[in-house]
Image 1: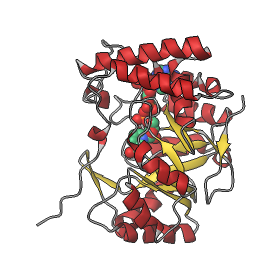
Image 2: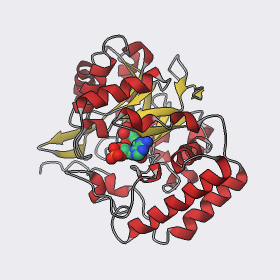
Image 3: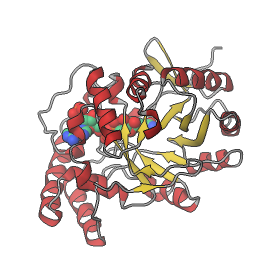
Image 4: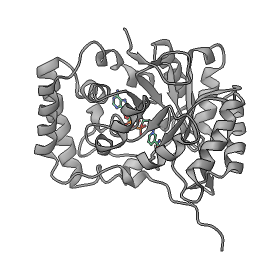
Length: 332
Ligand code: NAP
């Protein structure tokens, strides 16, 4: 299998256009997870040519980074491009934004320890913190870059104006927005901005939290603290619209390309611009379809057909905004 790659400014090795997403591996908000399966899926990804592993301190309150660190021990670190994040804090299970210099300087040390490494390839601000200026945050991150603790800088969930402010102070290599064929807000601004400035977009939720993998039905139940219990796309009666759209997309993908809806959805992300699709997987078998994504492309007719299927079935669309963590509340 030949996995497509692209260059990210500041990184010396080409990066695979599929990145392994490890939020679910941390367990929190995904109904728990299994450490052995998690290590197996990370190693399976790296053995099959996916070199980008995306994680964050907040995923499982350190658990995801710890598990990625364990998986990368025993000779795997050199194969991996670690993308992790900074600037979300948690206390008593509650998450809030914190981009203060003190928080960032503490987090990088915690992350390096958890991940058993002395550098991070791509360090991304997880969510903008309205209480700290973007320029100040960019300055602290650039210091870490100059010290060699991180190699390249990225942001996630930033507007174009926020990216512009960041770029005035430090080189910005990537953006990480939500992006899939149901959630396309970035088409109007963030994606053109990324293209214009030679950056790369790491698209999160490329499978729309599993919907676009094609196995979720109107009756599928989610256990424990799984965020899909409250995701407005997964609630009745709207879920039926999304499930019907996925079925119609699957039928189209099979008839036109001989592929599943999962391959169609990932291909859609990759054919929109300088993108990497983050694929959240927590069991090795969930990566079985990776090879089907490469070696073909969507044409203008396919993009039109996908748009018309989505419009035909989804009368009441809703975005991923429910995932945004709150701002910090300063003590009076
Ligand atoms: P996703 O990739 O859209 O969906 C992941 C889920 O899809 C999996 O947990 C799995 O659900 C299902 N799935 C995956 N492969 C499958 C297969 N072959 N067959 C059937 N189902 C399959 O969702 P995501 O994890 O939210 O996003 C991906 C990554 O993006 C995250 O892990 C994280 O790294 C990043 N992210 C970043 C942000 C941010 O704010 N920067 C926000 C969200 C996500 P089950 O395991 O339940 O079956």
